[in-house]
Length: 95
Image (cartoon, rainbow, N blue to C red; front, side):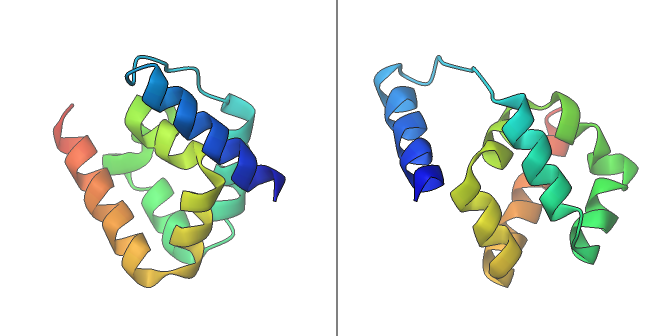
């Protein structure tokens, strides 16, 4: 419940700051990555040179992984996982 409230507050803050807020919660992101590493599909993505650097340097990827709701969704839902992979692919091409 607390995570959902925190995600909502983060979302509202982003909306009212016109997206200029980039304060990322590194500890939360790292905890989500650690949780995702329990899954084989994420291990393969995480260790792929094509995407590896994105998890550390790409603000959009880190912001995505900051959200508990999004992380839960990609863990539980194959369609959301596929969208995440498309998102990663797009971000990798922007470099």
